[in-house]
Structures are given as C-alpha cells and as structure tokens.
Image (cartoon, rainbow, N blue to C red; front, side, top):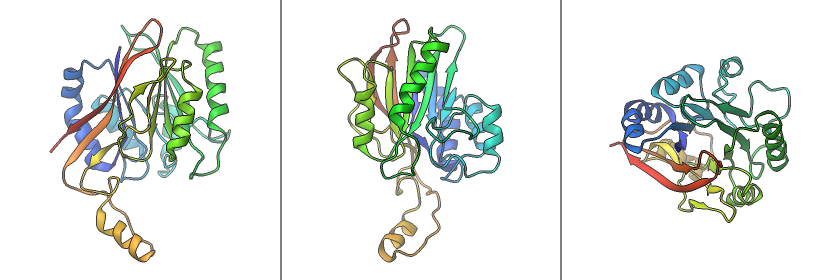
Length: 263
C-alpha cells in the first residue's frame, strides 16, 4: 500500500492547490490513500465545516487536526457527524469528535489513523505518551485486524516528536510530525521498523512566514505590538511524506519526504 500524507494545509491557497492538483498527483504516485493535516485550512487558522467538505471533495480520504481545531463554531457539531476528521486524542475527556478512525476502503487493508498533540511549548493537555498506549490497547481489543497504524503527532518540540517516535517504534506503522510547517530532512525507518519524520511541512504559500504574510509578522517581532496575521499569496508548494507499507504486517517498507511546487 502507498499512502501520501500532506502536511498542514494553510488557508485558501493550500486548499486550492490541493483541489486542483491532487487528482493528478494521486495518479502519478499511485497513492492508495491520501491523508492530511487540515487544522489551518480555513483562513490560515482553524478549519470550517465548509473547508473540510472542500478537501474531502478534492480527494483527501481522512484528515487530522491540532490546537486550532475549535476556532470555527460549526466544527464541533460537524466533527461529531464526520468520522473521517479527527482531533488530538489527548484533549481532556468530554470534547466532541474522536482521536482515531479506522478507514476501510474496498480492495485495501484497513488503516487506523490516530492524532495526538504535544505538550512542550503548547497548551497543557493530557500526556500524549500514555494516550498512545491507550489508543493502541483499544485498537488491539476492538480492531485486531488493523495492522496499519499511522499517527499524526501535532507538536512544537523536535525532542518530543523524536521521543514519541522511539516510544512507538515497532508498535505503529508511522509517526509523522505536523504543526511547525517546515519540512524536515529526517525521514527514516527507526530500528524496529516504524517510519518517522519530525515534520511533514505545509501545503501553502512559500513566500511567507509559515504560510502567513511576512510584513505583519516582521512588525510584531520588531515592535512586540499585536498584529493581524493574514495568509500570504504568491507561489504555493505542497509538502508531505510518501509511505510504502506491507499490508499484511502493517510495517513500513519505506518513507520519503515529498514536495511539489505548484507555481
């Protein structure tokens, strides 16, 4: 099985590029599934129900999120209805949505998609390491046939991402980092076979600060005064990772960073 996982989709430029190019990309890569982090896909911060529908319509099979997922008022109710959009499982109990989904597509082995969020330099939430243990125990009990298990770890610190990768080495198919919007060059198979990459990068404007217009961010750094950030325009790139997986064992055969320049 081959899976293309897209990094954080940023605003309308990211959504438009995915919508326009994904069908061709999917065919050229022979990708069986396309997954994506979409928590910044609406206005560069958060995800609306309409934005989610647009990405599903473009061919994304399932989506993860992160710390900005609650920005739009229509998201909690939409997430309750749409199981293909998940949020970090280590948010405190009682919130809408779910932190894992099992994707069953005709002709393919089932895939468990999981979402966790880091705590270092981010808001205080439940422990992602213990949450990972809990998710895997639930999958073992309720879905023992699901050998392919992919985790989006939405986190700030590279050390925390690396630690979770080693913690889950040999227990999941892949641990893929999101949130920092800068694609890292460390795609590799860990010692026990888990595919790992610190950050997938973003799908958004390249002439930007992490997808946002540069001048307001420079003013904020120079003056420390509040600024209104807006999604940048100009050339767009799609970034992510390409995974090759043994469907029988669920073990990754390979992982490579993936980059596509739109303009």
